[in-house]
Image (cartoon, rainbow, N blue to C red; front, side, top):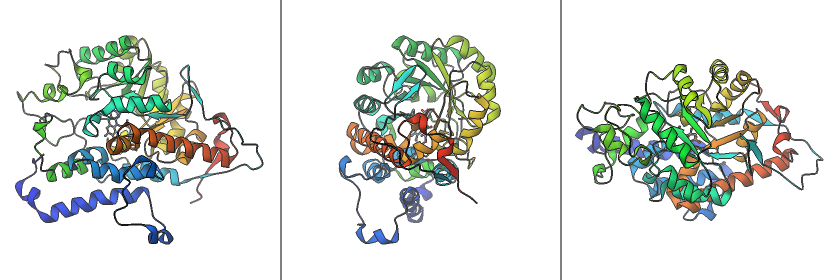
Length: 424
Ligand SMILES: Cc1cc2nc3c(=O)[nH]c(=O)nc-3n(C[C@H](O)[C@H](O)[C@H](O)COP(=O)(O)O)c2cc1C
């Protein structure tokens, strides 16, 4: 991790500003009202999942459990992390219009998505390198997804294989695809996933090499551990400098990513190729025999083109603010993407979802389901499977609560009229 200049890495000023930077990340999600300050204790980090009041309580626990570089990887956005904040703040501009005198004794939050009924609209978004957060990684997430009955999307850069994850899930999971710059490698991942029984491939389209993940870089610079003791540190698509020729960068990186096992990686230089375009989607559509969904669409224009290319659904996403610093919340992109699809295919959204009310608002604007990224990883880092289960349970409980409060007994009753945009 000690890749920063010796001056920077040893500078007290640098370290204390990083400490402050990472510390403020918790405050952004939760403003403590002055009246509550009296019950706040300085070291009030939860020590078991049942102590959590909300999913944000898992973030400081994850921070405490993880070394700086791993927490930096989980927390980072790009540039000033403004899009990470924007995703969250987007939800606060929507207000809920509750209906009264509705019999809300029974609440049904099940949804139907591409032919399968799920007991809730909460999906686990793909998160790479989860063994950096907990030794059991994606397998622990799969066990939690099984216990709580959630759809899980596995990352190409996962540190567990789709076969192991499905065995733990006892059901199919969707496979996210970083196709690399070599067609046969991307195709190999698709075919392996199909053989394993995955019913959907999620093509991530929002990420280019070289994202300026500054919070990660700062965290790496202060992490005193030697990374190569555990994993290759010579390749990362997000590093400021490209791996040097002959360094074996990608192959070393892929050695801990089982979805690349058995594939010829000798010509791979990028997980997300810069020349990927709609022709690539067309070729992929002709190759994928299961459902295909692009992840990362944020405009009406692209949604229309996606429909023309025969995709089965769209995931509105900005990679949790880790791709470009657009400052545009995904909840604000959602309506135009739905317009672009003209209701022909389901639209999911992720980014900044931390409350049941956020889920309610996304559903009201027309999402079929929502994804969560960091919250499940916080739960995993802090408490393994039990932490992920608790995160899912809290979100389910909060969604049930707001559905009851708003007088909406089932998801199809959560319509556009349930929300208004905050008057400016
Ligand atoms: C640590 C981390 C790793 C991620 N890895 C991937 C990935 O491999 N593939 C992908 O499509 N998205 C990836 N994402 C983005 C998530 O799938 C999701 O879009 C995002 O986290 C949602 O925002 P949220 O974290 O605010 O919930 C990652 C996000 C995080 C935080």
